[in-house]
Length: 337
Ligand code: AMP
Ligand code: MG
Image 1 (cartoon, rainbow, N blue to C red):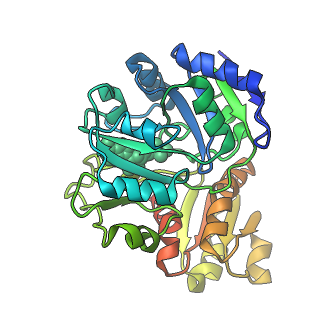
Image 2 (tube, protein in one colour; image 1 turned 135 degrees about the vertical axis):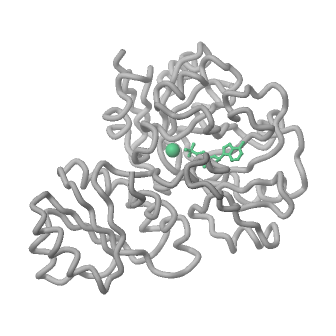
């Protein structure tokens, strides 16, 4: 199977393309689509067989639950067994947007979506193509990132096609995504709620609504599946080996890597000395501001992979809670396989 690639203008989503993709989803097929975070690999969330196709296409272990994408608060409440005041407050403040809420699930949500858990993760995406697709399909869409398991999340339709082009029915091309890293995940089944995965919505912005949030407990056994799939130690990784380095160590690391005789790339937010730059096969300087950096991070790592870099040296991001999401993804990308 080769995916049908349909171009959809986010400013004026083409109703014919959306109707076609919606019909594929209702029939149990797989549609990759842009959200504001990364591209998602969608299937009808209440169709167990369709959801299993997501896991097969991604090579994703079945202990990893999926996020269900819905049109609005009513759509979320149709899947959640409880809707506490904090869910309402967070949804009103941050939806549509890059925030996922974990709540007790209703029985209609299949175990395949929740990996057998009693809770379901819910999000109302803001991307106009994602919203139009959910409306056209008229069903909730289970959708993890549209990449093979542990690989880098796609932020363009071309990156989806390269990784999954022969494993999905339709890819909707709505251009590059804007947020660039995965959603912030808050678990509302604990008291206080737990910030499961940092993203571009900061802890402070959440806590202004919820009060102090808990952090996930570190598992005692490194090999044990983590509480949440985004918490797997190696994840969000390009093909190249990623090394996270302090700015002070950068010049030495560049010199050492250049000696190793394989193409080396670098990602920094500080300026790079001309001597270091000359030793690199590729260098991307990203903005020294967290949201703007996140928007470009995966696309940059994809570009370095495409350029054939075997090693990518990444300058450790600045201190500060606004960098938590970026720091989390880079730490996991740099984790040894
Ligand atoms: P991904 O689809 O790879 O972007 O990751 C899905 C994210 O959703 C994970 O990182 C988890 O944090 C979260 N998640 C999904 N379902 C659940 C659930 N039932 N309980 C806790 N976390 C969940
Ligand atoms: Mg993913």
